[in-house]
Structures are given as structure tokens and as C-alpha cells.
Length: 216
Image 1: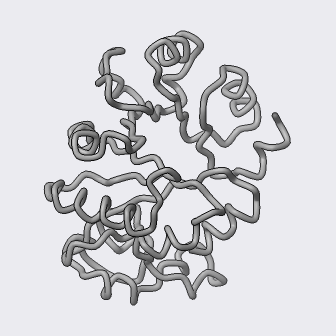
Image 2: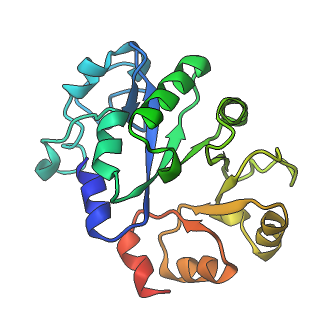
């Protein structure tokens, strides 16, 4: 939660959060599939309940001053961001896709957040399923280096979230002609930020939002 407060303070327009389904069907905000790297817990996130995850120290790995940070639930983040920050909700792949989408759509509706978020995933089937269930929800595919399977995509998807080495003028022209928004990640160097802004991408995903306003 501290990272989101920091993003708001820096004037970021949007923040990306990673979502994983817990053992009790809740959506936890945590990047890794296991707890060890970013918390003082152990084992798969999917094997723990939301209450168990929320009790973990999720900040000390980054620095001692973040020791009061815990693993939040999606609803807590939606409450914090409401009216202050748009969100990119990245769904991590999970075999329990129906349960994951059930909880996502429940929380987004409960917090009236559908118009304030984009839902993305490396799992294209998951995004296609989401668009079938909630056609109006802005959603997109994520592609990493070497993962772009040709320039042919579902007409229903709204966003192409693409690793920066894959984005050039030709790709941006294709996306615009296909009525797709382009989000490029993860761009931390000022020169690259300037280049992508010049190409007209719709969003630059960075670990350093404080650098971007100085360039454009």
C-alpha cells in the first residue's frame, strides 16, 4: 500500500498491481507465486488464505522502513486508489480461472471501479474469458520479449501491453489502425521514455514515474 501512496504522491496516472488467487478465493496483491522472496512467509500463495497472507511482513525485503507493510487484498487497493489513481490489474495465470474472474468482477463492481481500471494478463485465454463475461471492461494481453505471436489479435481486446524491445513505429501504426491501445513496459531510461512518448504510446510502464513528467 505504501508503494501506491508513493505513486500518488509522484503524480502517476496509473499503477500496476499483480493479483493472485488465495486458497479461500480472494485476490491478493502479490507478484510472485510463492511467498519467500517478498515476504517472511513460505510456500505457494495459492495454498494460503487471505488472512494468512495479510499477516506477513511484505515490506522488509525492500528496506527496513517498509517493515509495516503487509500483503493487501484487492478491495483495500481499490478503496485507496478510488478518485486518486487508475489501476492496471494484472491477473497472474491460475488454473482456477473461473473463480479468479468471479472474485475480480465482484470486487470491481462492489467498489464501482470498472471505469477506472484496465485488466491485463499474459494468459490470453483468461482475458478472452473476461471479455466474454464483461464486454465493456477494458482489458488487454501482455507480451514479453519474443512472445508476440504475429500481429493478429482478438477484435474484442482493447490493450496490447508489450515489452519495450517489441515496440516501434510500425507496431504503433498497426495498433492504432486496429483500434488497440499500446502500453509499453518496463521503461526506466529517460531516453527510452522520450522515444516512446514520441511514438504516441498510450502508457509507459516504469519503476520511476518521477522521471517521466520532466520529459514530456
